[in-house]
Length: 149
Image (spheres, rainbow, N blue to C red):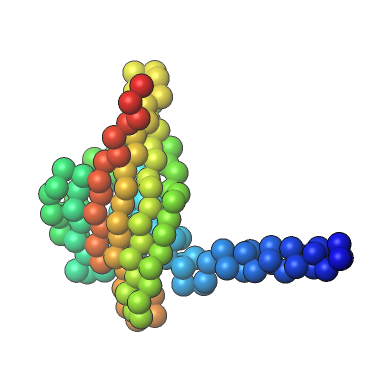
Protein backbone atom coordinates (compact mmCIF):
# COMPACT_ATOMS: atom_id res chain seq x y z
CA UNK A 1 0.00 0.00 0.00
CA UNK A 2 2.80 2.42 0.91
CA UNK A 3 4.59 1.60 -2.33
CA UNK A 4 1.46 2.21 -4.39
CA UNK A 5 0.82 5.52 -2.62
CA UNK A 6 4.43 6.54 -3.26
CA UNK A 7 4.03 5.76 -6.99
CA UNK A 8 0.79 7.75 -7.17
CA UNK A 9 2.37 10.73 -5.40
CA UNK A 10 5.44 10.51 -7.61
CA UNK A 11 3.34 10.39 -10.79
CA UNK A 12 1.24 13.32 -9.55
CA UNK A 13 4.36 15.37 -8.84
CA UNK A 14 5.73 14.64 -12.32
CA UNK A 15 2.41 15.68 -13.89
CA UNK A 16 2.50 18.98 -12.00
CA UNK A 17 6.09 19.60 -13.12
CA UNK A 18 5.31 18.82 -16.76
CA UNK A 19 2.18 20.99 -16.68
CA UNK A 20 4.07 23.91 -15.12
CA UNK A 21 6.84 23.91 -17.72
CA UNK A 22 6.54 26.57 -20.40
CA UNK A 23 6.32 25.62 -24.05
CA UNK A 24 9.15 26.81 -26.31
CA UNK A 25 6.98 29.65 -27.64
CA UNK A 26 5.98 30.69 -24.12
CA UNK A 27 9.65 30.77 -23.11
CA UNK A 28 10.49 32.83 -26.20
CA UNK A 29 7.70 35.28 -25.39
CA UNK A 30 8.79 35.70 -21.77
CA UNK A 31 12.36 36.25 -22.97
CA UNK A 32 11.08 38.80 -25.50
CA UNK A 33 9.37 40.78 -22.73
CA UNK A 34 12.47 40.56 -20.52
CA UNK A 35 14.71 41.79 -23.36
CA UNK A 36 12.34 44.67 -24.07
CA UNK A 37 12.14 45.76 -20.42
CA UNK A 38 15.90 45.48 -19.97
CA UNK A 39 16.54 47.44 -23.18
CA UNK A 40 14.29 50.22 -21.91
CA UNK A 41 16.15 50.28 -18.58
CA UNK A 42 19.55 50.51 -20.26
CA UNK A 43 18.45 52.74 -23.17
CA UNK A 44 19.48 50.03 -25.65
CA UNK A 45 17.84 51.45 -28.76
CA UNK A 46 19.20 48.71 -31.04
CA UNK A 47 17.53 45.97 -29.00
CA UNK A 48 14.29 47.96 -28.81
CA UNK A 49 14.28 48.14 -32.62
CA UNK A 50 15.02 44.41 -32.84
CA UNK A 51 12.17 43.30 -30.56
CA UNK A 52 9.40 45.63 -31.78
CA UNK A 53 7.40 45.52 -35.00
CA UNK A 54 7.26 48.52 -37.34
CA UNK A 55 3.65 49.19 -36.27
CA UNK A 56 4.40 48.97 -32.52
CA UNK A 57 2.30 51.23 -30.29
CA UNK A 58 2.88 51.90 -26.60
CA UNK A 59 0.57 53.31 -23.95
CA UNK A 60 2.59 54.90 -21.18
CA UNK A 61 1.75 54.80 -17.45
CA UNK A 62 0.33 58.33 -17.83
CA UNK A 63 -1.92 57.32 -20.73
CA UNK A 64 0.03 58.74 -23.67
CA UNK A 65 -0.12 56.76 -26.90
CA UNK A 66 3.31 56.58 -28.56
CA UNK A 67 4.27 55.22 -31.95
CA UNK A 68 7.40 53.11 -32.31
CA UNK A 69 9.32 56.13 -33.60
CA UNK A 70 8.31 58.24 -30.62
CA UNK A 71 9.13 55.42 -28.20
CA UNK A 72 12.56 54.95 -29.79
CA UNK A 73 13.24 58.70 -29.64
CA UNK A 74 12.96 58.55 -25.87
CA UNK A 75 15.79 56.00 -25.65
CA UNK A 76 18.56 58.00 -27.33
CA UNK A 77 22.06 58.18 -25.81
CA UNK A 78 21.38 61.82 -24.88
CA UNK A 79 18.38 60.79 -22.76
CA UNK A 80 20.20 57.95 -20.98
CA UNK A 81 20.01 57.79 -17.20
CA UNK A 82 21.58 55.37 -14.74
CA UNK A 83 19.93 51.98 -15.20
CA UNK A 84 17.68 50.84 -12.37
CA UNK A 85 17.71 47.30 -11.06
CA UNK A 86 14.93 45.47 -12.87
CA UNK A 87 12.96 42.36 -12.08
CA UNK A 88 10.40 40.88 -14.47
CA UNK A 89 8.09 38.35 -12.87
CA UNK A 90 4.50 37.15 -12.61
CA UNK A 91 4.48 36.55 -16.35
CA UNK A 92 1.41 35.01 -17.95
CA UNK A 93 1.35 34.06 -21.63
CA UNK A 94 -1.84 33.50 -23.62
CA UNK A 95 -1.28 32.41 -27.20
CA UNK A 96 -3.74 32.12 -30.04
CA UNK A 97 -2.17 31.22 -33.38
CA UNK A 98 0.31 33.88 -34.49
CA UNK A 99 -0.71 36.28 -31.71
CA UNK A 100 0.14 36.25 -28.02
CA UNK A 101 -0.77 38.34 -25.01
CA UNK A 102 1.76 38.56 -22.21
CA UNK A 103 1.28 40.20 -18.84
CA UNK A 104 4.08 40.80 -16.38
CA UNK A 105 5.06 42.70 -13.28
CA UNK A 106 8.05 45.03 -13.75
CA UNK A 107 9.76 46.01 -10.50
CA UNK A 108 12.40 48.73 -10.48
CA UNK A 109 14.80 49.90 -7.80
CA UNK A 110 16.68 53.16 -8.32
CA UNK A 111 19.14 55.01 -6.16
CA UNK A 112 17.67 58.41 -5.36
CA UNK A 113 19.56 60.80 -3.11
CA UNK A 114 21.64 57.92 -1.77
CA UNK A 115 18.67 55.76 -0.81
CA UNK A 116 17.02 52.97 -2.77
CA UNK A 117 13.54 53.73 -4.07
CA UNK A 118 11.34 51.11 -5.64
CA UNK A 119 8.30 51.19 -7.86
CA UNK A 120 6.42 48.64 -9.93
CA UNK A 121 4.27 48.47 -13.03
CA UNK A 122 1.90 45.95 -14.54
CA UNK A 123 2.64 45.59 -18.21
CA UNK A 124 0.47 44.10 -20.90
CA UNK A 125 2.11 43.18 -24.19
CA UNK A 126 0.81 41.93 -27.51
CA UNK A 127 3.20 40.01 -29.74
CA UNK A 128 2.83 38.68 -33.25
CA UNK A 129 4.79 36.02 -35.10
CA UNK A 130 6.30 37.87 -38.08
CA UNK A 131 8.56 35.97 -40.48
CA UNK A 132 8.94 33.22 -37.87
CA UNK A 133 10.08 35.70 -35.20
CA UNK A 134 8.05 36.95 -32.25
CA UNK A 135 7.91 40.76 -32.15
CA UNK A 136 6.07 43.08 -29.80
CA UNK A 137 3.31 45.06 -31.48
CA UNK A 138 2.10 46.88 -28.38
CA UNK A 139 2.70 47.48 -24.71
CA UNK A 140 0.60 49.15 -22.05
CA UNK A 141 1.81 50.07 -18.58
CA UNK A 142 -0.12 50.66 -15.37
CA UNK A 143 1.54 51.80 -12.16
CA UNK A 144 1.10 49.61 -9.09
CA UNK A 145 0.33 51.64 -6.00
CA UNK A 146 2.73 51.09 -3.12
CA UNK A 147 1.34 49.09 -0.23
CA UNK A 148 -0.19 51.23 2.50
CA UNK A 149 1.89 51.34 5.65
